[in-house]
Image (cartoon, rainbow, N blue to C red; front, side):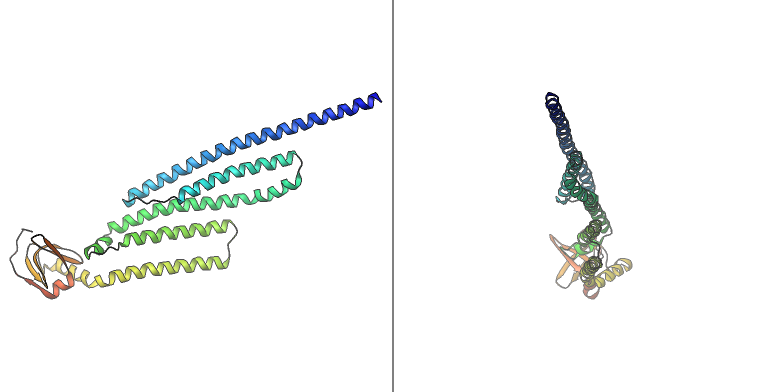
Length: 287
């Protein structure tokens, strides 16, 4: 009888010790996973923000303007937090396996197997945002240096094609990034591809139509400007009269000719210069 009681006590003590060891392992794993998750979140967030800030600074120096946006930083925070939760999920799976809770473990393993696709999709979005920001700046600078903006400025237009072209490239890259991200999540369908293709085509046509209607009225002036410059039709410093504008010619641009009379400055379309110019004074170097 005494031996039976002793065996039961030993079994209970062994069970308590085994449970204590198991509980200790679970607590230790939970603490390590919690600390590692917080550390990983902070590290990843700072690395992504630093990389994005560097890219944005380059984009700003290329554009010579500040583009305020928080989308990139929001995505960086989401990715960092997702990595933290992925670590927590992995720790819970390990704890469930140690505790032999197979139902919870198997359910969490299904989520774990799908997690890389979610992380990959968000990484695509972050990289897409960074590339779009940089590419937009490069395209805008290229359009500016090509003189396209100057053509519109000559006719006092507030519309700058470089901004529109830059915006088009930027959002096109965003669209491609979103499409790739959705593909990573398993949403690749014929309907999605068709919608993306239609949207890209509509935006492209819209941009070209805006540029065409913006520049079509300048074509005659551009040809007239080329003729005036190459033939010496009028020269800088000559006093001229064109319609109601009169004064000395200070600049012959590609689209307009600038006439200055005292403090008054007038810009006349080159096509009107050819049709109705009257030279009223001799060539003078004075402006």
